[in-house]
Length: 417
Image (tube, rainbow, N blue to C red; front, side, top):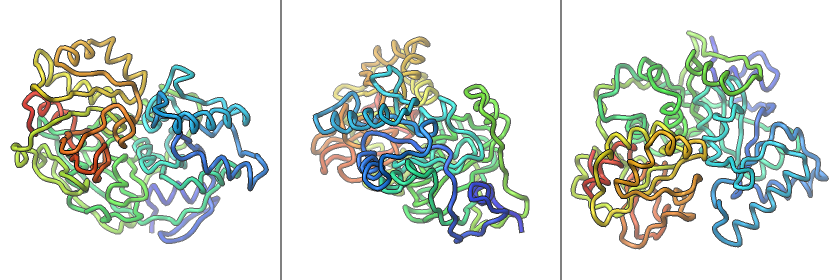
């Protein structure tokens, strides 16, 4: 029996010819990412348990992105500790406010050429699975595990079963990858793919841009998956080669690979969706929530702050004004995207519509800063989680949506798909 792409990547990383789902392997890691929120304990482990030794400074990427620019003394202290650690260990790949090139780690890594097909990538952040969009096995790990990876470059993995999601056809106008992943999460539930690899395939996936593919794999964790992955095609190869001269060897699932489950969707059946409070699986057609009055529209984060997300939103907002009483926040995932927004005229569209440009980073996605909700306020957000209190007060509400639905909602002041 053949192997899935995930099984092949883990087998190669573990120095084995083959692996089986459920098998525990000890694999080499290619890239480890470290941000400001979860690196504190990892650094302590390196210093206390490994005598300060690290595995390879060129394979550790430091990207403070959650509380930056520093929102308070606590976050300033965490960022300072991470930057001092990087300097002491001669880690040269640092993307921070201090370097002037910064943003959400999951968007920075692929756009800076660190993500390549066939790699194993880990980070102490649950949405690390986004990097599977380029054919890598990537997953979120704990801070303790990250400390061990910092020191050894290795980590154990239980080889996940794979669920194949085949999507056929063309997405209707007004529907984006965010609607597709919400549909799947709604069908599977928050634990429907528990510790599984979600492998996306089909003509719809092949037609999607790399930005849109990132949205799909990013939210694998929202239905409990270990990872999300898309086999690299020419679009992937071109994207990667444009950003790095490093060699890589893509891997692909065998035709007779075994899947624990296969889901098949027709893209034409999809409509604009939202995930209602307080779970990403609480999915409903946007039109069924048309009576929900909106306080804030947040277009940003790793699932909604890529350039194509803003280009889609700008088409809706061009020449129009947001509804009275609505806060329209534009939050680029990276400074590179921020520059593109300004250079390509999108900034003028957003400002004319009544929007506010917030600095690149994670910001209010996790309730840190730059758009916190008060009690009773309602947000339509392109982010990936809507847990109670996620973006502010426990009595606020977050509806997850695509950038198109978010922009339409900003114009009407009500959820509008």
